[in-house]
Length: 625
Image 1 (cartoon, helix red, strand yellow):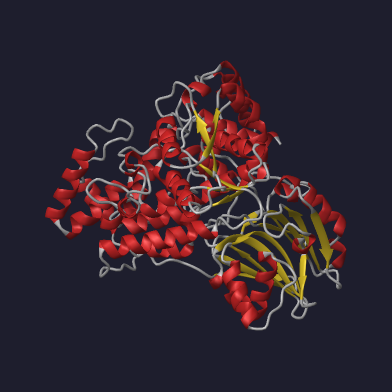
Image 2 (cartoon, one colour):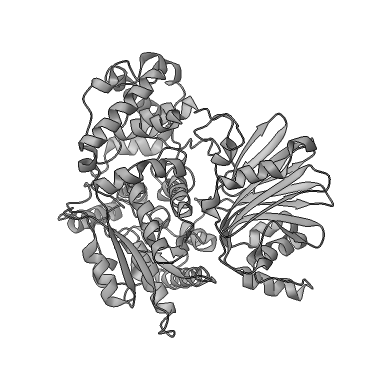
């Protein structure tokens, strides 16, 4: 895991090691173990690199790495199946001088060019220069676990792991007002119709599952991987699906344990992270000397603290558990640091707690952590998915729908954590048939309600109200369509950004077993009834891992997000002062009405559309700097 930088230009005067050093110096946190800078013989291509040593800790793994006197690579990420690929490459006559996955990637590219991406099980963002063709080939992993930003200035193409590398060169840092409007008004942190858009003008991100080819001052972007959410395997039995799911997941965990440094896990107490921890414990059962370290966040006197379930995992495994109790004072102490590392707004104070969990891992010398992120989006873990599921099966069979809905009501009658889903009626039926129309009407209703109630200035509202990003087009009557939207458009991409920035702020690496593309492709091919059944979310996973997980976690009814007591934190006097100061900044920028800082502050457990005090804090940080 590392940080990368690059400058590409037909004008060699725009490419220099000095600029590359400035870029990589701003991301030392991503790679404290070394740095490298290189400029091509013709002066048109320059690569920079910061190294966090994970595989092959020797100098043989240093970057930028050269191969066959033809290729040069700067690479951020991990290729988990590099050993299997390396074995095949050796049979094809390739030789290696290191034990790194970086060199394997170079050889694979020489063999297969852009088709090398099809073979990779990993998270990555890289740029590879081919001296013979003069091309630079850049790619980002299928889900966007690793970042790749780019911008163009006076004909030069710059790329980076973090946007602060551009600011280190003096490139203008100008917030994108459209993104700001959609965040303040609709709580949107992404433009689902253009996931390359960032919160800063002129700065874009290479979209997940895409590659970019630069040559002679021009570049082209192509998509190399996409799931068809409507392609279903209706012939597979539940027993066969359970066996296949278990096999793919255990293989994914096993590959993500490959490391030359200590590996541990994040543990929240929920089913996803608990399964990761229990799977690792099972894989290490023949190695009694290998004790897994886990890292958890706890909240004193908070009804959503998950210490009880963390203890259940501890009782069933051989883990060494490390916990941090986060409070208001600690949150205030790290707020500015996290805003610096995140660069773009984030949705809630849970990100501050996540930051502290990775800090805890660093204190205990654990460099790599496995995490359960991604399971909710691919396996329908969030309770709002019930509505889409009920809409889908209602269209197929009225009797089956009645049975499923009845089971849901019975199972969740005592669930005080998650709001109950209403029985689908005419409104839901229309919405599932005409999602585009419903979204347009909904947007008009929201705009009408907020026109007179929002703190947003009339001028700012009027200028951007027609540039909304909330015209979602997924099928409200198809579960897979909803899951695809959450996995690839709005939801998971933002969570992956949070995890990358927070972990790398402490030079830690996060690996996500649920985001093996083989596993994700398989899960998306399963019928909706395998994901939600008889009131249970993630039904296939629960069935597949009975016995490995503690029983009380396997069959938990509630769903608790990674949620701190944000409402009480936001009510503190120091937080109130920060909010008023933020509103004053936004008023001066013409975003909020004059005098907004003196108006009542809304207390909330999470961001609230339009006048959310949390969102005011986030946006003000962009303008303060």
